[in-house]
Amino acid sequence: MAQDPLFILILLACLAVVIVLMLGLGGFAKGSGWAKDNSNKLMRYRIAAQFIAVLLILAYVALKQTGG
Image (cartoon, rainbow, N blue to C red):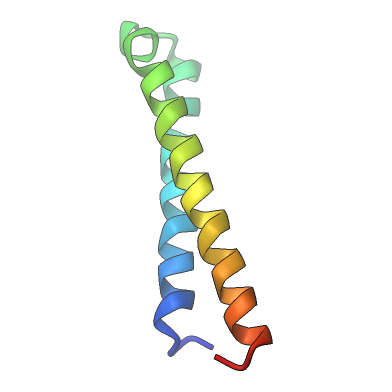
């Protein structure tokens, strides 16, 4: 499983979601002007990264069920 390139791509996509989420939460915790300027943009990036991660997971499951 660790040798599968699609699985590694899924792990990277999930890591990207976590990183963007932590950046957003860190900005909210500081309450600085940076968070005010970038919170909406980070939310969009997180949603896009989650969408990609979910699509990759669904593709992985579909390929494993068909023997791919």
